[in-house]
Image (tube, one colour):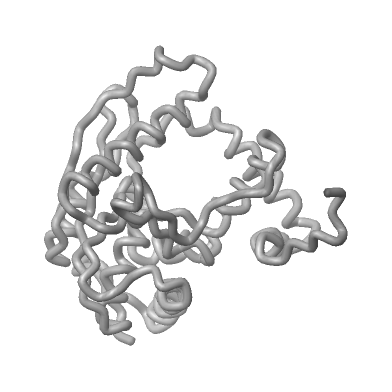
Length: 253
């Protein structure tokens, strides 16, 4: 499989191998979970962070590696009243080099409507809603999001602790009466591989991080998972696998 890079990046043999292995893992998920088919029209939510950049780069590479013909449009949602910054010029240049359609949508979030919810949650949901609107308005049938394995297990533990249920993130799910599907090609990939990919490709382009991120419950659970992983290095994989291996006989209900 050829490695797709941007013109600003020269890869060593070892770096090519690392990128190849991560792309191969992502392609395996796409194939086994049937996330993408020929003639799909896909919106990729491009936040400007490492996960969304790796997702976009890997999907672009998968078109050739998997011999698939599908359309990609990258969409960035800029929230004007939240003080964070991404490398806008890099996003635009990257998409131009790959001949990927790039759209920037500006919006504002009213944080006063629901003071019980964290600002991080409100902002995230508002940006997601804007992506939903763009996807349906422009006739796309899939929306690809950059959630990875670590996101899935954090969500699992959050839902167990706060909602009293075992649920997380599906690989794909129909939205708005099946007008489109959300797909998550990175869901079987650990964050550490995405970090490595992003560093190799110089994708770490957040200039000023969101000030609300550290306030989220998710960030606290992430630290707990890090502590568990110090006890058992396989904890992340096992937590993810546990969602596929529920044994009713040994549960209280």
